[in-house]
Image 1 (cartoon, rainbow, N blue to C red):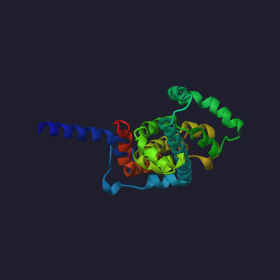
Image 2 (cartoon, rainbow, N blue to C red; image 1 turned 90 degrees about the vertical axis):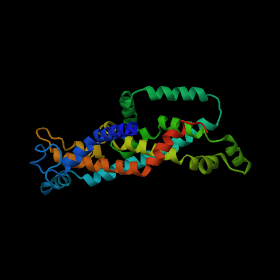
Image 3 (tube, helix red, strand yellow; image 1 turned 45 degrees about the vertical axis):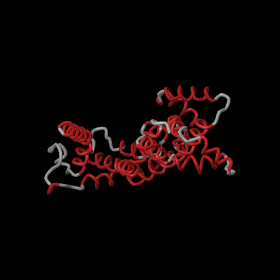
Image 4 (cartoon, one colour; image 1 turned 60 degrees about the vertical axis):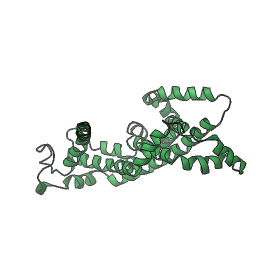
Length: 270
């Protein structure tokens, strides 16, 4: 009994510490301009204000930035999911010449910091004439080596007899992937989509380099435009950050079971 009390107490304290930044952000959103630095957390209820949201939508085209982020993130996640699942299926279920070399190269690519690749990647995008375009923003992130390894580890647990039964019934290799492997991989699909969504949604450095036109800016760049040379509108920035966090939180609650199941699917051999 004492052990359970200590365990739940430690979990509650840990959860409170991790949620403190979100609580502070929510408190900052409802503060008026005079209360932002006056109260540590929430002001009195009668002083709650929507001034920060009004200022946010007056200063920048926030809705446009959010639509851009949804488009870029949705496209990136969809393309990554297709290529990662196909690559993982091939690596898990087929033996071919050079497979081990390919996997070693993929592992080496994962060890290279993404910042090192910015200069050559920008030169390639510039040569292709894709600077300041959505294609230039999406194409470099179309393939996820990390995603391939996730799906490889998960698909490896699918019994080979199940695929052989499909071949006997006349399934093509693509139908084996689409009709047999992918339905089984639903937890991994959910986990990967959540990880890829967060990475693309919060991506700041590459869009900052590629995009020049304001009407193409994504949310991280758009919110950064509110940083002035002599003054910063912290309340409006907090409101923009709060609205930007909401899609990630909502998606996590929708996919939390798949997220946990997907990350643990490769941990136990079936």
